[in-house]
Length: 79
Image 1: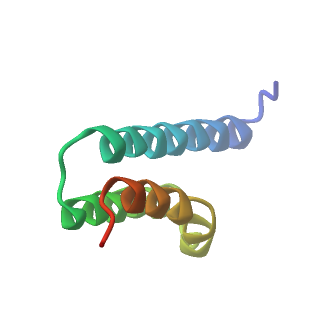
Image 2: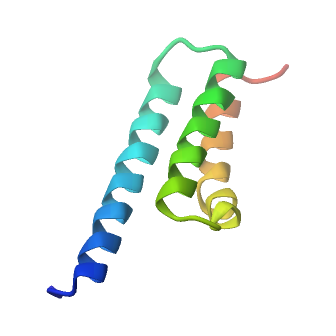
């Protein structure tokens, strides 16, 4: 493992984002939320992700948004 402070900080930010995403996924799949509350939670996680990794909104949308969408659609189908 590197002693480089930048690498250490980057790894810490990655772990933090992973924890946020995993926790949000659990909330979405287990708590009794409305669809609107679900999407509000996803938006808050995205805001945190952008704070951790400025300018990477597209990466969040590409990697995490499909995961959240799948959980929400399975739990709260529109039909």
